[in-house]
Length: 120
Length: 106
Image (cartoon, rainbow over all chains, first blue to last red; front, top):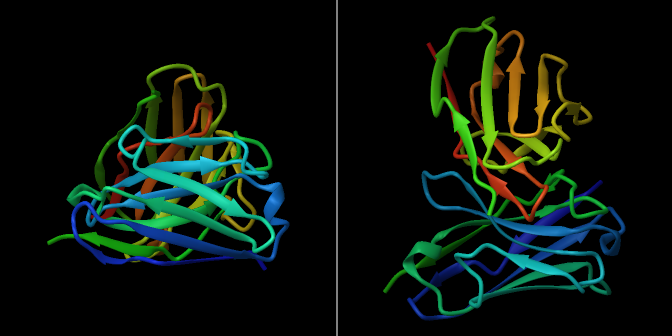
């Protein structure tokens, strides 16, 4: 059974940093692209970042480029999102999602999300 | 960046109604359009991928069509468990979601 479990969310002050993790199980982690998607309270889904299976290719939404870094540890079956210079507008539920075996695939499995709140 | 425009943003419908939601891309995305259903407090669920392929386990009353820039999600006969918010997503060039369509009970 495919499972994705996010952790690392919490309350952080503006300008602070946080690292999110997504522990994956039930599939060959290194074979899949992985994504981070966020959702501000009461708002829609926003794609944040993606990474390919071996970690050599990454992409970011303009709103987080230069502040967030996606990475993965295939030995630990874990996806990460390092978030620096956090702003109030980064407050959201953050979901990790499994992509396809290529960059064109959909998010077919999602975690339950981890909540990030940026406030003083 | 590719922009995705969904319409309507909300609709009211009754059980048994046929419901259609549209999604338009700002440039051609071939068939790389996915549809998700999200219920309050839950993660999204994939319904349709590659414009018209039904995800395993999804009821056949859900269908998708389109290519290029214009796409449609159809629910042939709305069921009580279908009241939710629906999102389209392009996966052709990085990724972008539409703004969502909330389907409410009339």
